[in-house]
Length: 596
Ligand SMILES: Nc1ncnc2c1ncn2[C@@H]1O[C@H](COP(=O)(O)OP(=O)(O)OP(=O)(O)O)[C@@H](O)[C@H]1O
Image (cartoon, rainbow, N blue to C red; front, side, top):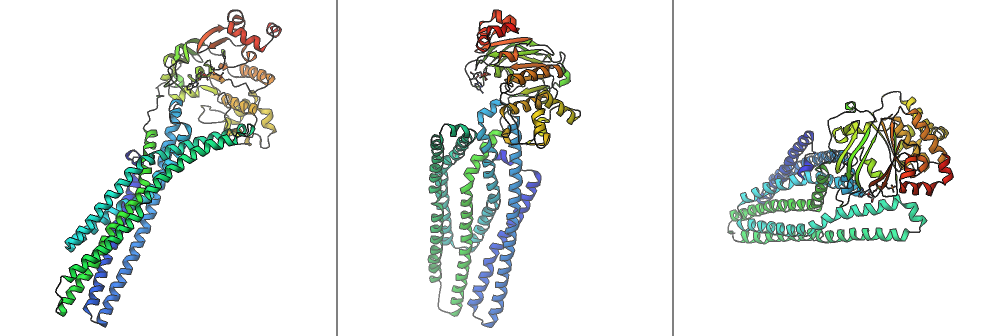
């Protein structure tokens, strides 16, 4: 919770202080009202007929005015609490989002995407609720309790004070037992919500496959299981919490009965002979009534604190989950070099690189060595799971290597500022990723390092990526809307727009992770030709499955179970590398291969 409180800005702390002022005023008003009640009873007790009526009206009027003033103070406090809660939750959400953005793939997979979403939304809402309700109750309840108890002490009724003390002690023990019982279950609620999000998300993203395979029942069963667990957990906690209100009401009733009973004893024990005695008894009755009001205030403050108990445990669990994100140390550390610090521009070199995924036992890549000079095209081929994507993901530092060195422009990638390093690279992932927005926004994306004429560069990028023809056919051309995830364009179009995004930034080094797979052979060929002709001698690293895509590369690296089993040009590999030959013959006939 303390970590979350760090996100409360100075301005909010000042607002909170103002609200404490209003809360104190409200408590003072509420605790002053019984004094006027006391005056009224004493006036009635005096029995001075019309003489008393005026005083009763006066005291009654004051009681009404104080009540209205207290109402006003309460509205102001509520408004401030809502404002502070909204501000704080906005700050926390922003801090969590920024932190998640800086995470490497390692941290993201440790938390899991659904959990990160729940933590940014649902968990922050829990904390917001605590602030909205808690601010009023947290401060009001103790202030009221302490003030009212001090007033009770002033009344000097030992038996009544003991009664109030015992009931409070009972309530404290009772509430503690309940909290201890439900706290572990509250911890589970958020984890189960993550699980529910996970199942829902998976089902929605794979909806077409679910329908095509008539797997609705299977998915429904998975959802029901997750839903059922969450429901049972809620049922357990709410059953326990449902005991609180009835027990409190019984305690309040017991308290009133007890005060009446003990009060009657006190009054009975007083002399009742003269008129003066009767006035004395009447005044004691008035005092006991006031005592009762204070005692009720004390118990009511407990009631308010109990309301917090409905949200406090969940908010504590949520703030711990938020803290976990905020305190996670990002493994990818920024270096000090900028893009200008390169000695050997456009080169990419792997020196004895070995890599295993975090927490994995086995190496996925072992002892990889190669060097790409400026303008070279280096291709990676190999069976599925041989480590091609893993290898190229090490260049933008999606993961950091376990052993060896990855050099870009002659410098270790870990020595660059991460932004500077990534601005030098044009990375096109295996699956084209598009965001909701226009075609233009998708290509001129992020802080991409490009300085120059945007429209001209956009046109060039679309042309090279063979995307211009279909973008020109769209209703609003480059301003046409792309749906979330690129749902309104085809797989091949998505890939071409992703390639255009990389071309747009005019990078020094291109990284294509099997990015031509959804293109037809003709487009694939034209696109690669255009790329090599018009991209300022950029270096290209291409992962591909098709021999046709990589045949003309300066160097082809054949991977097998994370090891290099062949390295050279197409012709060299056709002579020396058995794995390469197998791939080549499985795709092209001997005639086709010898023709090229
Ligand atoms: N995030 C990850 N955590 C742990 N292991 C992973 C992760 N990603 C990939 N792997 C493992 O690393 C190995 C290499 O995977 P990689 O994706 O690099 O292969 P690939 O050659 O690109 O395959 P494909 O051609 O099918 O895309 C695989 O055995 C895979 O199971």
